[in-house]
Image (cartoon, rainbow over all chains, first blue to last red; front, side):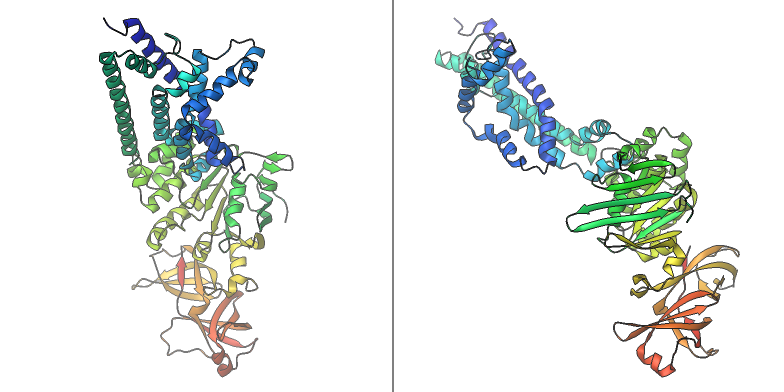
Length: 229
Length: 357
């Protein structure tokens, strides 16, 4: 008898892809202005905010998950906010998981973008300004094309890192089939249930996926370098 | 000075650390105004403030009938319509040469003829598909110059466009800059610390030191004043307007100048051509009588006006030759030996005359 049913496979793959895609999109939207600010500000807040952004890289994911879980509880700050807005509690829901993923993968989007933005030559932007390009025009026609390698890295890192998360998911989302059970948690279940054939299949699949993603990133990076060279 | 509508009026202040820029200046609305001064005098900052790239600049700025800045606020750079050429060209690295040219041209909604004209005039056709990082320094500056011109600017700003280039590249670009000065039909503001560029390009000259204007006026007037630090520099000299009157079989040009006739080797200019010549003080010596037995061709009668002591035992002599000032750098010993006194008639022996086309 097979341990993992067809619907369980499909549900876990779907939740994982949805979570990673939405997390990546949100991170690109929020991470871009944050990374731009970190790359160019001279504010004394740069260091502490930079440290907070980097925190998920060193913090045990369970610690982040623990505090988020407390926050999402009915008497926690996030819980009170969702309650005041007339929304359901985020704990053990997909949206709660999404919030946790965004925080957890934040440095993986912000760091490459910050490095990319810092490398854009200021005179190129000034020249564009004297050539009558407005700030939004400069963003679209100078900053984005020159940050292409950084954007690719930020996208793939955010996506891959979200697919790979485990500790935060278990703390915040739990293990609800079709709602919060992602592939990394499913693998844990399979091993717990001694379903090694399924576990082999999933582990090898995730390994192949991660390898393919990094390969894609290198290839895209090289292509960009050639296009500029 | 009567205020003319097309003049450029600059009254800008800016403070950064210990440095203070405080400029109050009126520039002609045509021709090439050169801002000249040592490194760190604030000339690039002034140009950037005029372009709208220094948000801390305060004051007033009017170009012709357009107000770019006053007490109520400043127009952002992208709404001014300046053509700016930076020291290191600042081409957009992700666009080809034609992509860079079109970037400003498209946003200015300028006529296709403008684009074609400057591509042709600056000989850019073979470079159009190339990427900026495959161009030489001189080619990059030519592209940057064209990019600024095809954006149909009200004012062309050149920020030391030759300083990043070696001497042969500079010589390659200068004729293009002169063509731009003659043909662009817009006022040009040119920042440099190289006196040759001043002598060749300036119609109007502004001297800047430590953030302030020390002198401003028609270029030849300012260049030939000896009460300015310019006259005490190692390369001090005078610039004369000249007209070619003839050319002998060996290619030697005879030039009519206010100081008298000068002879110089140079490009085969046809008689009637007007140009400028520069005579450096260190290339002029003095004699009390005309030496017919000398190999020097250029002998000008002059009246000694003043003798100024320079460091290192040298003396700078200022003379009047037909209403034109000349400078000579001679030794203290020669002054004593010849008994030179202001008011004496002398012969200025000119060893070298540099043609500035």
